[in-house]
Image 1: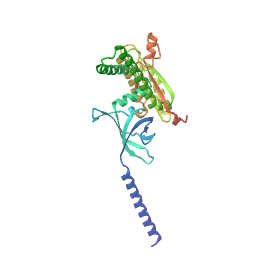
Image 2: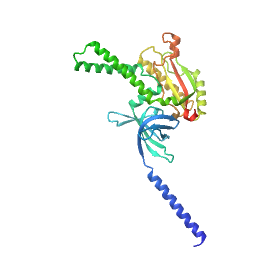
Image 3: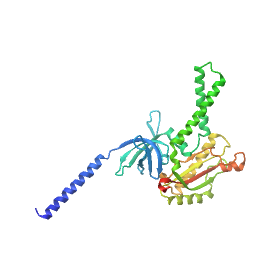
Image 4: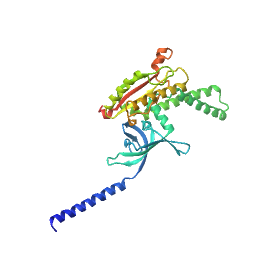
Length: 308
């Protein structure tokens, strides 16, 4: 056999082996399903704390489907934005592992009550008035059941038991929130803009648009940046109305940053509706009320990325 013929055979064999390896790799790329708690977000990637791994890296793409499961049997699905994938949220992820052992997600699902709890943790506040009122109603129902079982209990003893149960429930909720969302301390605040609103208004005042656009441009120069938006209201009016006002204000600012500032959804944390919490001004005065009707926008960077 001459040399040229030998080289030709070698090339054919090598090509065949390469094809077999590619086919083998494709065959082993199987879809996997994992369940865990989001403990970090940075752009189009997030990390999960699972039973097998404290920090499983999940890659989000334009084709990743995000949905909230609903109904008693969790059979209905509601399509959601990637902005809902916030730290502290329990999720189920379906996808395949790439060559760097990252899970490329095709589907991400979560339950509605888990999203509400994660948004409350993301907002960084203790239970809002509405949540406390709901807890009081549940405790009152428990109190009625206890009265039916123990007729001999006196009214004073029942009130003391109710107060102790409320204190314990609030303490446990705060401790659980701090435990599940300690990862928020891992972010540096690089820039901040505060937008103020008139009483009962949710529309963005044009005077703040240049500041928000400047913040958006500055953020784009930061490696792995995230945008956090929190809406607030004064305590004038009902709790439910103020909660809705804070949500609408945060939503309008978020929409402006996305449409006019061209901030990608993968760079936005879910807007926080803070309601009457975190009052910075005296709500007994007009000046203090004006200070409390606000939206705070921050540019965040993970300390691990920043090297701090």
